[in-house]
Amino acid sequence: MKTASKELQKLRSMAETSLNKTAELQQVLAQIEATLSRAESQKVLEKKNKN
Image (cartoon, rainbow, N blue to C red; front, side):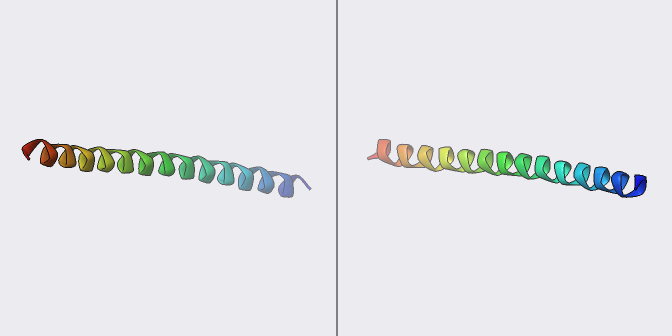
């Protein structure tokens, strides 16, 4: 029984780590998307100001 409990603890820990990494990845992707969006907006403003 102790072995099963330890295995469950190990699996739970792995699942929590995976969820944390997923959240971190989503945050990084959102930051990249925001950066690209700002760069695109800047280009549009620069073109608009040239005319």
